[in-house]
Image 1 (cartoon, rainbow, N blue to C red):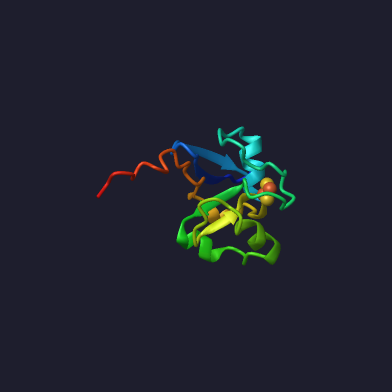
Image 2: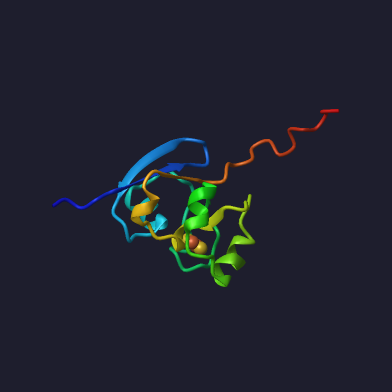
Amino acid sequence: LSEEKVIIHFINQDGIRTTTAVTEGQTLLDVVVNKNLDISGFGACEGTLACSTCHLIFDKTFYEKMEPTVDEEMDMLDLAYGLTKTSRLGCQVTVQKWMDGMTVQVPQEVRDAVGSKGNQ
Ligand code: FES
């Protein structure tokens, strides 16, 4: 009997997608570390809820099925760049079977924050 794998797709800060096959029970931070995904600066505090670099954006359908965010996570998320309504900290989300096929997205880096200058 081989262990069942859960497929999780990651989209990194450059918009590049990586598909991983992982066992349940590890956090999304564990996955990024174990699979050596190319996400710059991810998980700076190693999952101790002291940063917000593990910020990930989820599909609404998956987000709504997750355990509610605890206060400590909410506090750190508030500091996260590019916060959305379906944001979580990756180190606080444990992979479960029902997440099979889920896509999580790293907030895109804004390279041209002043790019709108001159438009109208
Ligand atoms: Fe720092 Fe998740 S790795 S809060």
